Image (cartoon, rainbow, N blue to C red; front, side, top):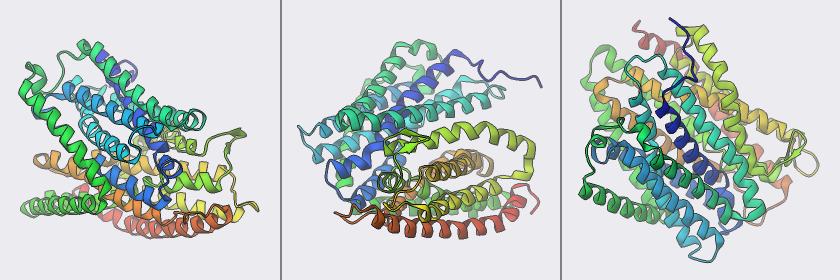
Length: 484
C-alpha cells in the first residue's frame, strides 16, 4: 500500500475543518471561564456553579441526537449546521450582554445557556457527518482526515482557552463571551460564503430545495426547547429527573435488544455496555477541568507557567496541548502493538492514568509553600496524565461502538455513548461540589486541605475501578476477538 499524504485532502475537508475550529473556539472559550463568571460576577457559591455547570453540560450532550436527526431526516446536514451556528451566536451574544450587567443579569444568563444548549445540539453531530460524506468508501485518506479534524477541535479549544481568560481579566466577561460569539459569526459567514465547495455533498434533504414549512417548524421548536432548557436549568431537580427517566428507558431498550441477540453478538453488546460504564467514570473526571481543577488553580496553584505569568483559567489549555502532542505518539504505539493492545486494555489504562492524575495532585499538596500554594508543574503533569487518558477512552468511544454493536443498533448506540457524557456531567457537578470552598473562605491553606482530601478520594476510588477494569480486560478482549 502506498503512503498517503495526510495533508492532501479534498477542498471540502478544509472548509469543514475551519467551521469546526471556529465553533470549538467559541464553545471552549465560553466553557473556560463560565464557572468563574458565575461565582465572581453573579455571586453564586462554588458549589452552586458546579452543579449548574454539570446540568448545562448534560443538556448539551443530551441534545446532540436531536441535531443529528434533524440533519439526516428533515433540513439536511448543511442547513442544520448554519441554523445551529446562528442559534449559538445568539446564545453567546446573550451571555455577553448578561455579563455587561445592563440587561437581565441572572435571568438572561439562563436564556443564553438555553440557546447555547440547543445551538450546540443542532451543530455538534453534523460537521463530522458531512465530512464522512466527502469520501468514498475505503478511501485511504479517511483516517487521516478524521485525525486532522480532531486536531481542529483541539486547536480551536487551545487558542480560545488561552485567549478568553486573558480577555475576561483585561476587558471584562462581556467582551470575553463576545469573542465566542464572534467565533461563531466567522463560522456562519465562512460556511455560507464558501458553501459552493460542498454543493454536491450532504444528506438526502440537502439535495432538494428547502421545505419552508419544515424549516419554520424546526426554528420554532428550537426556540421553544431553548426556553425549556432555560427553565430546567433554574429547576435542576426536573433536569436530573428527565435524565434519569431517559437513561432508564435507553438502557432498558439496549438490554432488550441484547437479549434478543445470540452468541457472540450478545456478548459483544455486554462488553460495549461495560466499556460505556467506564466512560461514565472517565467523563465525570474529565468535567473536573472547568470546575474543581479550575478553582484549584485559582486558589492553590502559582499563577505562572515556566516562568511566565498566566491567568489561572488558562491552565485548561494544557488539555488540548497535551492531546495534540500525544495523539501521533499513541497512533504509532497502536500500530506497533496491534491486537495486543485491544480496546478493553486501552480503556483500563485510561482509567489508570486518570487515577494517577488526581493522586499526583493530592501528593502535590504536601509540597505547598507556607501560603498554601503549589508549583504549577504539578498541574502540568496532572493534565498530561488525564489528557492521555482521554485519548485512550473518549477518543476511542465511537470506534468502540462501531466495533462491538450490530449495525442495526448503531445510531441508537452512538446516542447512548453521548448519554454517558450527559450522565457523567451531572455526577461531575456533584463531585466538584465536594471541593467547593464554603462562602467567605479564601484562605489558601484551608482550601488546600479540602482539595487534598477530595482529590485523594477521587484518585483512590478511580484506582480501585482501574484495577477491576485491568482484571476483566483479558476476558473482554477474548470475547471481542471471538475466542470466548
